[in-house]
Image (cartoon, rainbow over all chains, first blue to last red):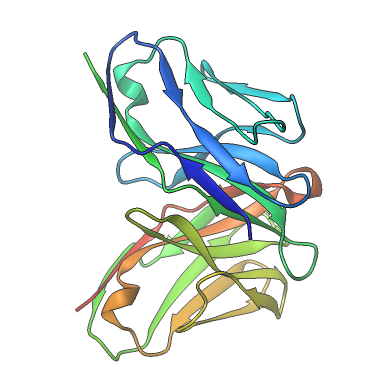
Length: 116
Length: 113
């Protein structure tokens, strides 16, 4: 079946440092790929997405490129802020069993803490 | 904001009691989902719905049932709660091209003692 593997956390960085969170996936077919962010006590928010190979998703200074050859979708940001402290989830979307629905398969999440 | 609410937001119950969680959406989306979130596992799909009265199982459906009698409401029921069902439960709806993007509700924290 499909699976998503994220780098284990927690990750602690100083403000303005460069961020990389690694994500690799295993899937049949051509899934769409996503990064979600969860701030403390809240639900998940869609951060960015890519729907085909070589697509780059970007939002709020975060970027990730869909690399089919390495089955990866690493999240990067050039200069993190304290407000970026959250848990980040990599996910892939593929067809579910019924009704043309799509289902998400998530990685286990990476806790990021940014210190001032 | 995809107009998703969940109720209750917090619940403490005892082993063996039935529990129903409600997900309500205001924008007439066809697809709705229930996930559970546990440390070290990310989110895992419990059940999903692709229309009124149309539902199917996800990865971790044992011990759970769902119902969708109208478009806006998707109910998750634990017939006889167990401590292993202590978790945070998230509802989601699907939007976007090919219903590819999912948006999540605020979650329900359930504790089974």
